[in-house]
Length: 344
Image (cartoon, rainbow, N blue to C red; front, side):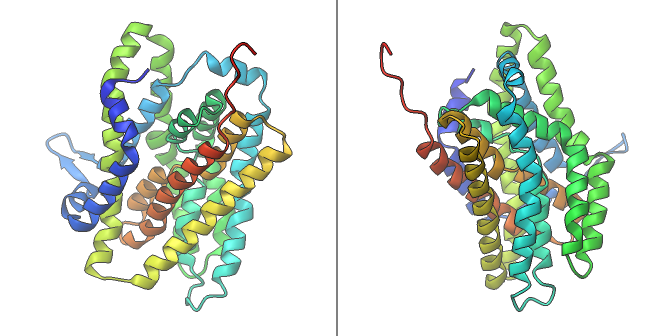
């Protein structure tokens, strides 16, 4: 169910993301302004732009779920269960390995800052944007949607557990910082910014008639895509703005290298698991994407909320966001199901 505006933006999404990064580098001031809380007198409420944009994206994802197709997934849950197990197991395998490598570097804290950012990425649920790549690659959409929904609904439990389990790998004040961030996630961030919007979209998809749902999608889908681009710009402004004012090429290179390593290992482990389970091409593609595509927007929002004084931690998060989309494009191309012969 795609509108003309949404389809137009979807086909140009890669270039639009690059443009958002370039705009953040050239003109970061509006993005830095949007990152700040904005009081709304006389209500005593405060507007936080990044969580609001993230909620819009996740509401749109829930709204466009093919609800009826999920029934077949529940009857054959092997790929869904495997994806959920891998979603928890891969961070526990990848992060300690990366921490071991970083301790061999001359960094005084053993790369704990970069490692903190990567932990916050891999602890997030499967990215809603993975459904877009599954659609492009003609993969198993019900499996992907099920993994996005299940990992999102479980995130209030899984995210704090992963953060607490991996925090001993950090040195200095980063372990304490990550523990505080885990309490923030457990205390309501995952529910308000991740679970509730997605559940609200899914509820609308269930209760609305096809006509009204179509009208709502016509409005929400392009707005959510535009919102995701604005969110990318806002997050990038926080990181790239500081890079522009205080250039740190070594930090930039290290952030890119660490993000690339974590991204590569996550996709590789997902691909190996798909082969071990002997999944068909479409389902294998979906499982592999789910293992490597984490909700980097949610982790960026969490960093902004809990660590406003450390915008440089957004660098590896932004790098991971770009790298996972690049890897996803290659995966859906290689694992695209073979066309069925006519009359077969």
